[in-house]
Amino acid sequence: MSPRVFWSLLLGALVLFGVPLTVLYLRTHERVTETVRLPPQGEAAYNPLYVLGQALRADGIDVHSQPRLELQQMALGPHDTVVLLQDSSELPAPAAKALLDWVGHGGHLLVRTPPPAEDDASSTQGPLLDQLGVDSLYQRSDCQPFHVEDDPSHVEFCGGRRFTLGFAANAQTERRWGGEHGLVFARLRHGQGKVSVLADMEFMRGEVDSPVARMAASTGKASDGLHDPSHRDLTRYLLDPNYGKGAFWLVYASRPPSLWARLFYQGWPLWAPLLIAVLGWLWGRSQRFGSRLPSPVLERRSLLEHVRASGELLLRFGHGARLYDAVLAVFLHRLRLRAPVAAALEGAPREQAIAELLAWPRSRVASALTPPPPHDSSALRERIRLLLQMRSLL
Image (cartoon, rainbow, N blue to C red; front, side, top):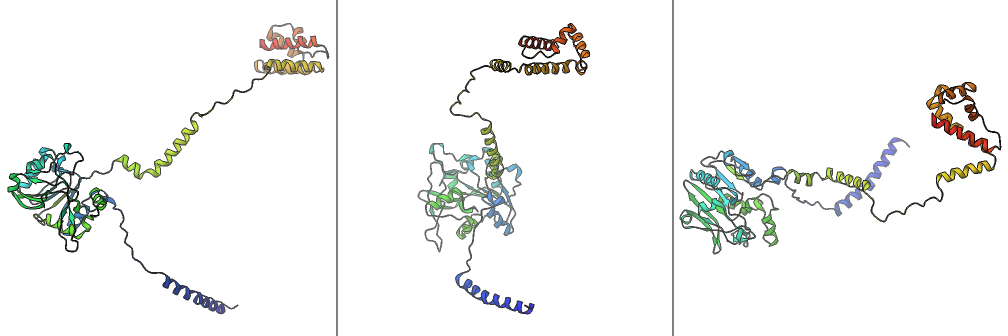
């Protein structure tokens, strides 16, 4: 077959089978676009205000993020804004006073009330709210209706603790928002600056899987953080007093996971096989549990009895010379170890050397080294006795 015919047939086969398969695929498949929200990575995984910071940076504002409120490390300007997501009840009195002194010079502070406590008797609010004249003790949590044009049933501040204002704080109030069960927002004048007190700041968070968001989702009022346009509008309204005038300091109140937590959750591909190997080694080295093995059956005769029976059998069948040869071999082995020069000799010289070594008469040594006559049991026993005695003296 010529190459031209071969390629023509191949092209025809491709067209014959490829066109119907392509038409079938296009008729039975439809292009679908699916958006998958991946879990946050890096700083976004532990900083709830990360999305807020990125939005402010995109608007040309200088933003600083801090895990905890450290006034010594924060160069606060007179027109800066501090978003304190950290629990205000954790601040000591000196830090609260220093923070309010900064607000008095023109700063803007956003602070939330402490989260609701399970035990009202142990409920505290800290010195910061006390100095502002805000009372959140024994207040309940209740959703506040928030008018949204396309969502008539929209609510906010469902997981926060409401508050009331004292007489002095009430006189310094510019704006307030709440109901008969208490306030969820109040903006107070403090010197030349302002303090915005909120029941909670869940709408400012960037992550969806927060504790309050899960609680809201369980009640059918899902919270989507700053992904919700109404939350963005509310956040922009609350940040208004010093917006664009100074830097923003976002105190997100998050501690990075400890080393042990990171090793447990992220290092399991390393420690899990090691743990299995250690457990296997311990199992192999540990004592076996269960019923005890039975004791081995004791032999009916001792070793000496077996040796004696074997010798008597050899004597009975006229093989006494084998017993003599065995004892002589044992003596010669000891002689090679203790006196190798004497063991290397043969005949009369060896007998003389052994006699001098043992201080015995040569005739006695020669008698011991001479095989006994056949069927003479007394001569056999005598020579074996002499060989054993000579061996013990070496």
